[in-house]
Amino acid sequence: MAPQRILITGCNRGIGLEIVRQLLNQPVPPKQIFATCRDPAPPQNKKLHDLAAKHPSIVVIKLEATDPASVKEATKEVEKHLNGAGLNVLVNNAGIMPASTLESADAEDFLHVYNTNVVGPLLVTKAFLPVLKKAAQENPQKPLGCHKAALINMSTVGGSIEKTPENMHLFPVLSYRCSKAALNMLTKCQSLGYKKDGILCTALHPGWVQTDLGGPGAVLTVEASVKGILKVLDSLSEKQSGILMDWEGNTIPW
Image 1 (cartoon, rainbow, N blue to C red):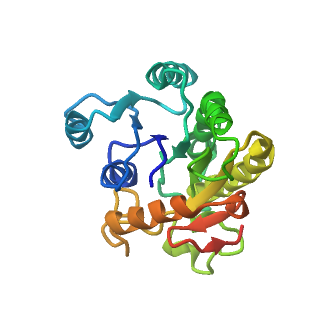
Image 2 (cartoon, helix red, strand yellow; image 1 turned 120 degrees about the vertical axis):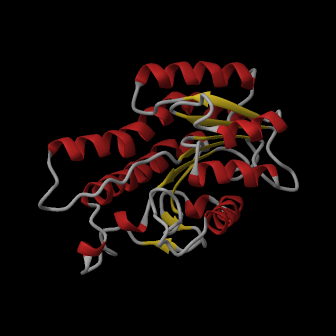
Image 3 (tube, rainbow, N blue to C red; image 1 turned 135 degrees about the horizontal axis):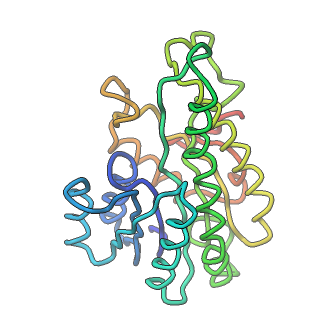
């Protein structure tokens, strides 16, 4: 059973859009799906708007995660639609992965990627923390999980220090790797800080997926990745809070 109210960033394409689509096909779909993206105006996001036109449960929200003013406006809009209810799940999915090597990386590259992949999730989470707490308070008897209140940060095995491969040159995305390692630390800290509020916090690796980021040579279809992601979300419990997992439910070392 899907969580009642969920917000996903980066829903205009790829994994974010597919999460929305598959949530709608759940036996018991969410009552509200807040699908956010930087520029929701069609025709750039026609697929998302087509879904929203058919399903009143979808609310398309403009949200630029790195812009505090945009985050504030999006929070107000979501709170209006929640009408006093809590938000069960926040998925920080939006991210970027430019080419970057030890030779090419510079301050501009790192700051740009960190701003999107680390600062953005931090700002969005802080903004929506009150409604996540509200959802936890609405379900005091439930154990930690997505049916109570959960924060999911979309990460990658590429951010695992222990799993860094010898042939790193085959995946020249240095700033991306470092930003996701930082996001993993943020997730761990959030899991410790928000446990008292009844909020589960987990980092999730979706696999190497055939998206604009993953490229056509990736091994996983978007459909297969998201099918696994939703299965993992449904099974999350307190023992998975504060760790990095993959789309098949396996634990990945930091």
